[in-house]
Length: 286
Image (cartoon, rainbow, N blue to C red; front, top):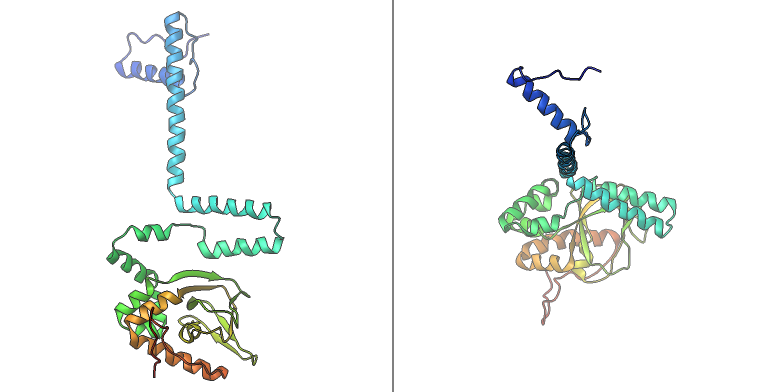
């Protein structure tokens, strides 16, 4: 059989280089001995060396290519890895199908296919950068909420930096009547129903807040709150609530005014006033 390439001694440099490159690539990329078997021992050892080098380069190429593809969307990969653990957890505990579906929908709405260690990211930034990002992320909440729109920007920033994002599904009871309140909530998006003893039902939607009555009265919840749709809320703990309002007493009065109006509507009479300071007694608001 005629050889693939004729003798190249008298050919141009370009043809000779092309032939040499082809032979090298056939050894290294195909991990074989190319078009012709080695004839002498020198050829055997050189061919084995080229195959080893080729296999190593091939493995490195595949590894780097895989790492590059994964790094293009690392947040989605982290979400997928996390959700695989959740699926294994549900399978291990043999959770019923409807519960698994609700958990799946929760993860889809809560993380939307991407997962970030937001607390760690923000914790590494300077305070001005952190505040700028938080104000940007919560811009819709601030724009829709009259309490924030007309308030001191320093108060708004102090509140936003202490908020924690939460998601609730339709039918979830965010607050149950009679329980001890440890949080209040601001509605970024969604509709909730406030349910009272007299079967009165009040709807709240984007830009509203609830749960502040219990924090002001230091008592138990006066009503239940149920999510009617998927709700994206920001929660504020009682400790952070009192810490911020201690610095801005006029804003406490704004919360008290709304709380008094809500208490009147549900027929409750409870004293409103700031939580007592450590080692002392709080003074009642007028």
